[in-house]
Length: 196
Image 1 (cartoon, rainbow, N blue to C red):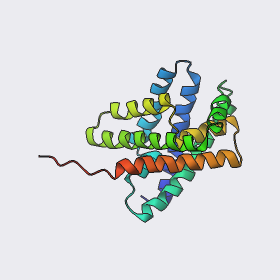
Image 2 (spheres, rainbow, N blue to C red):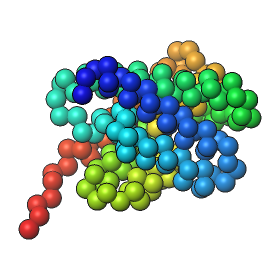
Image 3 (cartoon, one colour):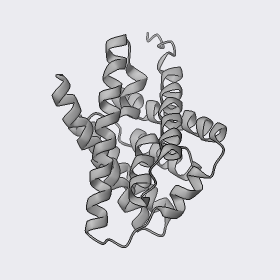
Image 4 (cartoon, one colour):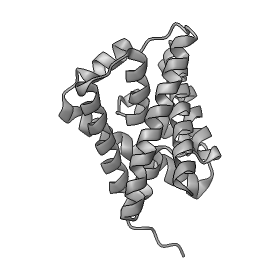
């Protein structure tokens, strides 16, 4: 895949996570909201868009690691576009309280919650690739949302929607990106099971 194509697919992925965030914030029932959020990842996987948290666990080379920077930037732009359009449509949703809660948490806690989310995202993609069963995408998404694990791209959307910019928000997102990556890579390095 070329760099430009990767970048465009990264923007689409960020936008789809934004769609997931919109539906999550629109529903009072958080269990249903978490379930509906999973549509974003289902679309990303079936359309082969490039989501950082879905790709980082499968990186094997230094050049692929460099591609992750392109994907993160694209995800950031896509999530920004979703937030701007949601604001423009006057949808009556707000992520201000959610963003403040996340930014009020200790950075060490944020890192650990991000690692947990990275594990969930790696398992979602890996299990789906091996089984083709969408339950393996839906369940980890619901788990990370309902458990309060930190998904860097989802939080890009929430921070954009809340207008939470500046050094603190950037620092927290950076910690989340690193934590998601570590969680995914730890499980991505597991030995493959032998069959037969």
